[in-house]
Image (cartoon, rainbow, N blue to C red; front, side, top):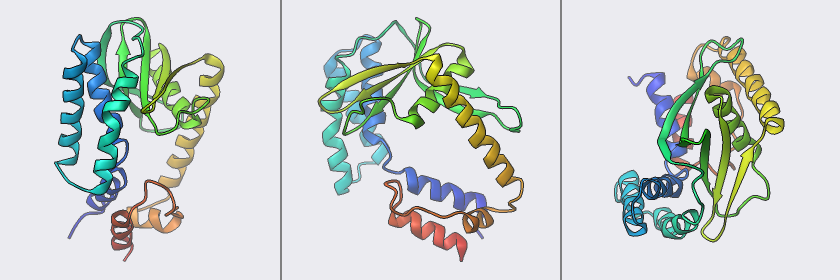
Length: 221
């Protein structure tokens, strides 16, 4: 019999299967450029990463997402890095009072100039940073005691926003409140099945899929 943990992992994979695949590829290509590679080498690295992530599947959504990679990478490449690249996908963690486990994140780009940058690929560039993205960078700032920013990239435009103290403070407080609420909830739940039975699921969310629905229904039966 499959364990509840395995069922949760399967549901998570289904939900994230197609999440930000161009972003992962563009990040790989951009890191290649920051380390001194050519644009041609960066494009190859980005496409190679995409193929690796999709295992060569020919799904229609894959082809749509794949077509965005080179335009997005070329747009991202017009941004001048603030300093020398020190690390990519740098693991960080931060502890909140009243939460028994650390909140973990992964910084896309850590630069030697005292700033960490999160890359966000999107089909429409926002006029200001999204609240959930600000919370993400606020976590990095708290964990690393460094400046933080968000680099938004579409296939035509790019925009960089540095997250200042005035925005990071409230965002971190929101994140702490959510973490404490989840801790309180999980303290009273015995299993993944109980948790799913207690929570409504928004099947209209873009991360939902038929496969995810099947996995959830299988866990609840």
